Image (cartoon, rainbow, N blue to C red; front, top):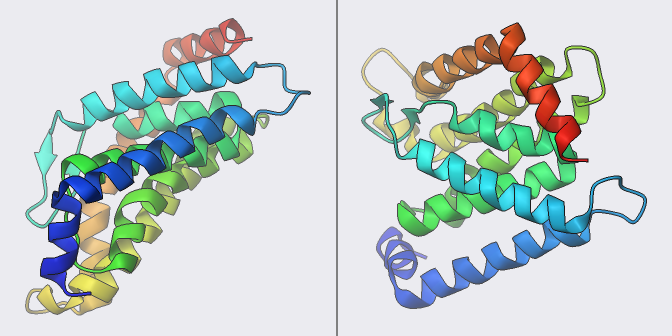
Length: 214
């Protein structure tokens, strides 16, 4: 499938309907994978996730710094998605991240190859849900942020090497340029996020919200 055909598909009504249908299925999945033994209800999981996805999407539209070939530093949009995994676990977090990625694809599609779409949209943001693996550990939120953001970085790095390596400037190859390019914005927002959640007042607020969700 050529780049023009793929881009036209996601710009078309048919493509937008298909992406929207997948988003709805993923949101439904967030609810049904909450087991009967979970302390938090299916309705709470769906409602909280939907609200946080909406907040993350709104924050993602506020750009502190935009990279020339895609990617930007935002005011903690990744943290909002990470909190879904922190409160409800990695499965819900991954699915919520995928929903966010598909929403981004729906609004701002940039498609040159099916694998590139997967890496840059659902997989990259879904990787933020890996943070939920550490939710019950000491310093779990900080460690989770590092792991989740690293997961997103790996997806963006692979996309950069495979599909954008040919545009590397002089003095760089595909690998080194992808590392430098992606760490420029993901690294900065990642550090900002980890510093924020390490502030005692912020950590206490997150913990109180955690208890309020029960």
